[in-house]
Image (cartoon, rainbow, N blue to C red; front, side, top):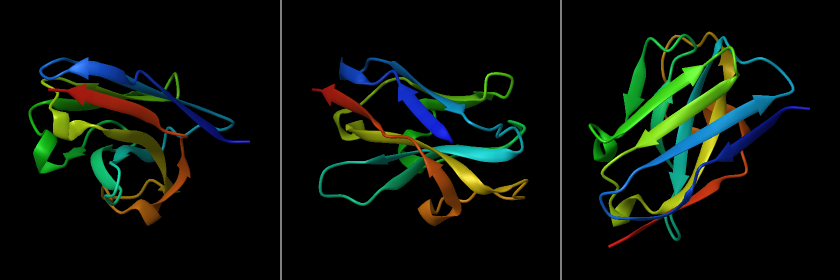
Length: 127
């Protein structure tokens, strides 16, 4: 049974940093793109950062460019999101996800492209 378990969320002041981790178990995803999405109350889920299966390509939504960094360790079946210079508008529940298609040649930002999801970790940034 596939499980994605996120950790690292919490409460932080504006300008602070957090590092999210997502460990996958049940199968290996070394040839699947992986990503982080977030959803704030009353808003749609949005893609935040996506990384290719080999780590060679990344995508960031405009609002986090220069502040967030996605990375992965295929040996540990884990994806990370380093979040710096956090802002109150970054407050949301953050989810990691695995692309349904192994070896997809582009980084999809669409939720429906992702087959496996974690339970989410809350990030709250106070002003």
